[in-house]
Image 1 (cartoon, rainbow, N blue to C red):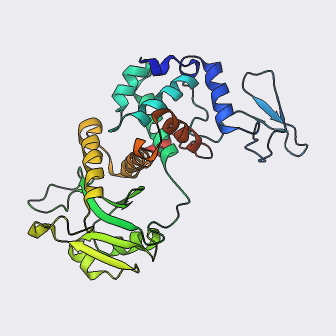
Image 2: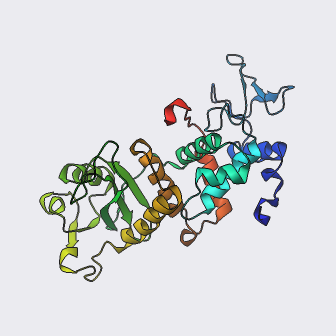
Length: 301
């Protein structure tokens, strides 16, 4: 372990629980049953509180209704896993978590998927508001489940479409295939009408009619990659990290889980050092994202 893990919360469950309570309950215990704040008392069981509301009176803990609920894995190991996955640019494999944390491979695999669920964003506002530049592109990962390798093209590959706001954040979506329908839907639902949109010159981008202030394309087929401020190089840079992580660290991804891996890489990019977020702060944001989310063992398969 490096010095970063010298903090008590990384090797002591009581300290880990206190850290989680301070992070997730800054105004006092929050009952997950009725939502009341700071109206509960500690029971004789460590870490368990009882709601003092007359209509509720139910027991709860800081991990209830989070991705850590009902886990038999020590809380300090959960915090180590959060930190490892948030501080490793290209991700951490379940095998590496298994070796580092001293848990079974199955437990490590499940922890990783739960943490990815905590990283998944929600309630997103339109990108490119106020005339900002948004880039759109796709990348191809692995092979679709049950698909045979084709002689040409990407018909057998899994597809991720991403949008990135210049100097800002990225959003990625697992799609069935690259085309006009997917482009219209994703751009229509996520990009502001005020935005300037940058894409390559794929046929479906040419055929689509996006409701944005401006749509410019670069023609990669003719060797054009930059024309003034028209390019998709921000996404190309993001994809280089994403694909290296998927191929070099995770190596294999089932199609049903691809959206979770995309959320993981999006999260790290959106909370990167360039935006003023360090490793510890990034891990804390991921832990906060665990609240209100559940991922059962059966649901993760």
